[in-house]
Image 1: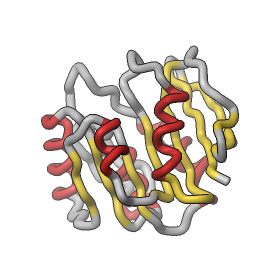
Image 2 (image 1 turned 45 degrees about the vertical axis):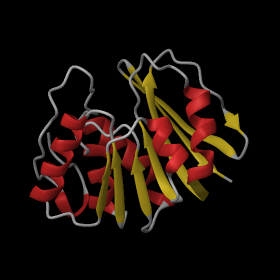
Image 3 (image 1 turned 120 degrees about the vertical axis):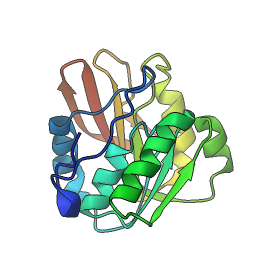
Length: 177
């Protein structure tokens, strides 16, 4: 797997190769960052269900100043650490928590939140409701889900700004107003 844009463009990173994770393909990551790129100039990114860390690292490669990477699976988080170390990323924090515990204990506000939970969770509205406290006004939420998932077009101060399907995956992008 490789980083597709920014200062780490073409650099390779490790995949998790775990049954519990789904890597976002290079072309999908590139499309996502092309869609959200105009909304950012710095800030902090949270990747809440991190897997290999590719989405958060991609954000750091392009314009985010600090990344927070969380995964319940310790092996996935170990791969994230290896990937960040190989790219000399020091502006990173790692968390090994269930997403609900992370949200409950988090004191940060984020400019970008990336959500790619296991498709079996399928509690999209609940997850969006919970992360509302973590996203800054003007911030972006990228939610990767199964193509046929049900999701809200608006939720409190979150408004849908993009919705694209890539094979079996749907990418929904919200902005907080």
